[in-house]
Image (cartoon, rainbow, N blue to C red; front, side):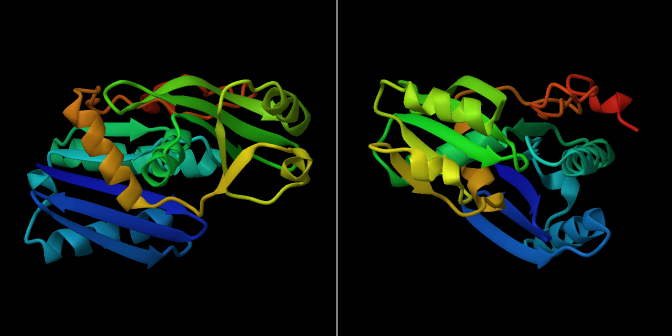
Length: 228
């Protein structure tokens, strides 16, 4: 199986390709035109593997949550690649990718992922490990720092908290295990994609929903065909 993944964050784009048993990885700095940088990196990794985009079986990427513009850009790029090469898409929540990365390096079964949305709010995701070793989403919401702190204090199970930023919020939390994970990349996405395909998780043919989580976003549940 051939799987192509890409990820854009903080002016860095990463692309990974699974070409049967071989896995390749490329990283590149993003210029003002982020889609051009991603496309350049994708072409580079395909060329090194003597492949064309139409040879790929699935394209996988994160559909959020994150910046409004970043999510739209990634989805539009993925859809363009999919339509142009007739390759199906798989979109994965960024919160789930963080949880899966934490699962690989810990022995925990309950994961709470907290990512910064802005100064006053957070993206908040709860995951538990299922019997088939996949993560089951219990909740993904957009919360204020204050409400997130209340929810964390109420946790009764043996949860591990995953974060990627520093905050006064975490200095207040006592007797909770906190794991700081640096930014994810395309390699993290490719291993989770493999897991999902193995257990026949849904692959979409050009139909992708943005995962904003922010209820104030009017386009929260609209298909990418309606994004302009």
